[in-house]
Amino acid sequence: MSLEPEMLKSLVKAAAEQVIASAAELTALDQAVGDGDHGANMKRGFEAVLGKLETIAAQRPDEALKTIGKTLVMTVGGASGPLYGSFFLAAGDALCNKQLPADLAEVFGSGVNAVSSRGRSKTGEKTMLDVLFPVWETLQSEAIGPDLIARVRTTAQEAAARTAPMQATKGRASYLGARSIGHVDPGARSSCVLLHAVCDTLEART
Amino acid sequence: MTDTVGIVIVSHSRDIAKGTADMVLQMVGSEVKVAFCGGNPDGGLGTNVPLIIEAINQVWSPKGVAILVDLGGAETNSEMAVEMLQPERRDRVVVCNAPIVEGAVMAATEAAGGSSLEQVRTVAEELSAA
Image 1 (cartoon, each protein chain N blue to C red):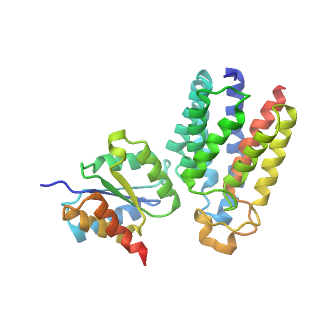
Image 2 (image 1 turned 90 degrees about the vertical axis):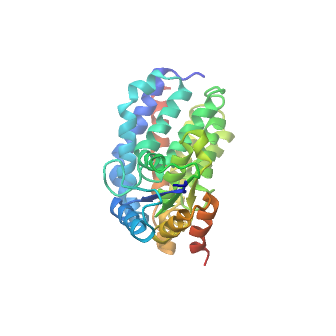
Image 3 (image 1 turned 90 degrees about the horizontal axis):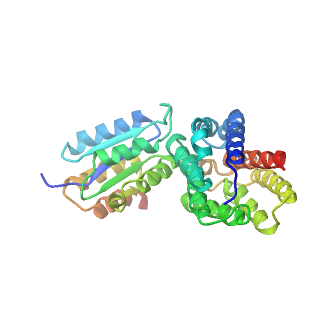
């Protein structure tokens, strides 16, 4: 593994701060299609992650991912806790015998599959997976480098926007049926926010 | 007293969880162990993995524990809580696909008779079959 502690710390800090800064937007989206707690839940979870930033930065990257996952599971208080938590726990497990950045796609994919089995969902159901799966494909199709960062950013942005015309069939939004159409999915949006924070941080350092 | 399957009630609202537990106690009696929890870590509406784990351990029985949940997040968080239990307890806990109030009463009624975890679950889930 080659992910320097300073870089790891910057990535985690940026991701957490961006999610916290987006809390109001995520809540507004969730009020449209869900129960309106996504922003507050994600904020609580990532504030807890920020509270452990020094511990996380001192850990091996695979352990750091697992600490983030466990923290989210224990503090988020909504379905997004186990969903995002499972992503980081599984990615941490996968990273244990892998190298970054070479095995990035594989590590990310382990996280995506964990979310998929936890939520018993794939794509097209207006969820965070509608961002995570396309980004995983991009990671598999492109060589590591500046172009990849730009592609990931665009993929995440466009994929989140594509959830607006979808009708939700999973989670609370599914109770709305056709009324869920027309709003970006809050989980897709929070995934996009996290990915953009990672892209921004990586770009600033390269 | 012979062992009975423990019942855990998980709602987004602590009031709903407590009310459901009260109904079980009144309708089924106190021979079945019932625990309940609700609310997110800040005390607002939501569910909370550490509290669910605590509730499961509180009513633990060698016959197992049946969990009744309300909306989506309660189910996801309950499944996560089960996975985080000690390995020897994990396989003896089920999340029932049943309405929370009726499911809890039916599950507790079945459990009170000394039924197995599978029987308790089946009776609760028959409510969702129609």
